[in-house]
Image (cartoon, rainbow, N blue to C red; front, side):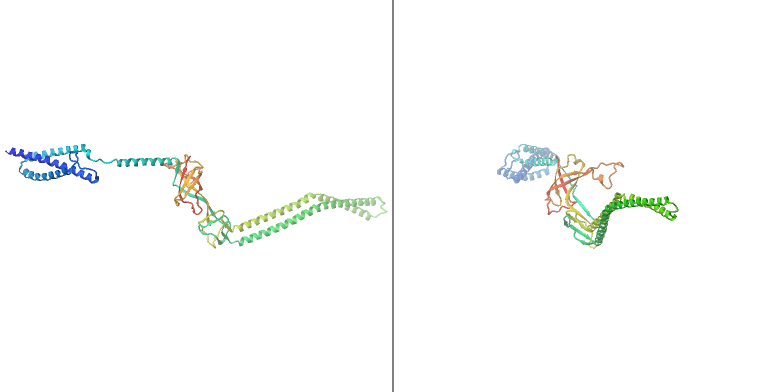
Length: 460
């Protein structure tokens, strides 16, 4: 009897388990489809067999759920009176019921034709996004394959260091910091009084040298007339001396040819003395003629004196030019158009020759770009360049490659690397490239040197 009771209890437990599993399956499916209906108004509820559910089915499910609750209460009372064997058998049946529930879920999955599946829009969006990324990558590759750019680039220009060539006190300061000046504008003036005195002294020396030159020229003109006349005079004196000698010889011969008793010894001595004197005069006259005959040499001597005076005049004029230059150096003027920077002089300062007073940044601005050595393979002089300035994002500059430095930046540094000593680590070198700006500069937009720029070189 106990076995019958246990068998009956096991049968009841098996039915209850099957009913509970069926209700659980219905509850799961109804919950899922209610969620789908909330997200999609067009979705319809389906039963555990995949058939569309109606309002009547919903009512039946509610009634079954209520009946299941009541029967569950009755079964609980019966289960309390059942033995251990019935409990074990009921547990085994419950496990079988769970397996049946899993099978029913599998069937529902296979028969889910009435359930609305996720749409294809997410896949389409994903495919479009992938295509857009690919197109953008291709465009970037096409645009960048014939370009070389770098952010290691700066504006550069010619900077002139202004220093005086003379010493003195600054009596006038005509510029301010960062002032724009034009070629020839006065920057400052040094006290010119000392240099005015030196100029006046040099002018006096020029006047003196010119006067001496005029005197030498007059002597030359006189020599050209005087020396030929002196030659004629010397020749005439020679002829007179020779005539006197001949007369003295005749007198001497007369005194010697007469009877000693007819003349006196005094007469003989006088004739002899006159003869000797005439001979001396002839010798002297001949010497005078010999000297006077060098007329060309004497004239040449006068011409040399004139030339010496001329050189003295040139020397005095050179000294005058030096004095005038020194006087002009007291005014420091701009050598070209540009901007005043780094002014370190004040009014009344005592400056020395060669001392840096200020710097002038010219208007000739260019770009110095330090490209990697691997970027120079196809870069050539004349390549077009597009330039962006960090300080002026809206300023678009155009230029061209002017030159490529024949040496890396590290090679010309103050302390070049000694790669032959110690361990060697290869480092990519950078080579300065000069880029000249062709167009895009605006007169009202200053472009100081040292600004960061990003050039892009269009390779051929």
